[in-house]
Length: 305
Image (cartoon, rainbow, N blue to C red):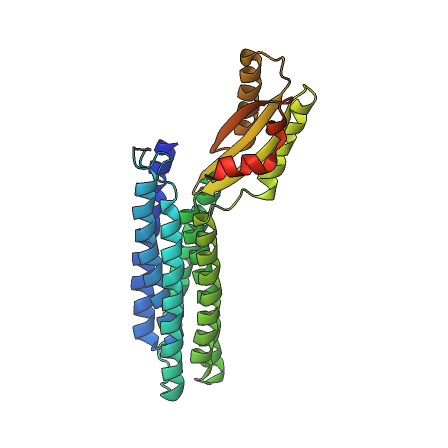
C-alpha cells in the first residue's frame, strides 16, 4: 500500500506542471485582452498550483509507513491538502469579486479578444486532460488529495468556459459590463466548489463512517456466515484518506474451539478485504452464550475509550 501511495506523487507532479503552464497561458491572455474574466482565470490557476504543491507534500507524508507515534500510518495527511486547497479557492474567489467590482466602477475596453480566447482555450484543454487523469487515479486509489485536485481543475474548466462566453459576448455586443459580471459569476461558482472541498475534508478528519455501499458490502459478508451459527454486531467504520478501517464483534457458540473461531474470523476478514479494497479489518471474538456479549452499550463504551 505504501508503494502505491508513493506512486501517487507522480500525479501531483503532473498537476504542478500543468498549473504552471496554464498560469503562463492565462496571464498572457489577460495582458493581451485586459479581460478581468481572464484575470480571474489566471488567479484560480495560481490556487491550482498551490493546491498541487500541497497535494504533493501531503501525498509524500501519507506514503510514510506507520511508526511509533503514528501506529495507524499517516493517511489523514491528505485531508490537510484538500482542506487547504478549499480555503485557497475561497480566497481566490474573494480576489476575483474585488477585481470585478473595481472593473465595474472603472470600466476598460477589451483588446485582442481573438488571440486571448485562443490562448485561454489551450489552457482549458490542458486542465481538462489532467483533471480526467487525476479523477481516474483518485477514484482508483481512494485518494482525496487527487480527487479534490481533479474537482478543482474541472471547476476551472467550467469557469474558463464561462469566461470565454463572457469575453465572446463582449466581442459580439460591445457591452463591456458583461466581462466583470461573468467574472463575479465565476467567483460564486468557485465559492461553491471550495465549500464542498472544505466540508469533505472536515468530514474525513472527523472519522466519517464508510459509504452506505461499503457498509452494505460488509452486511452481505455477515449474511453469508450467519447460517454457520455466528452473529455480528458492534460494527464500526471510519475513513482515513485512502484507508478504510472496519471493526466488529463476532459472536460464536460457546462450545466452539478457539481454533474454529479463529478460522471463522479469518474468513470473514478475507471476504471483507476482497469486497472493500484498501481496508483494515479488526475482529473481536465473543461467545454467544455470555450475556455481556450482547450488551451493545457496554461494547460502545469499551470501543471508544
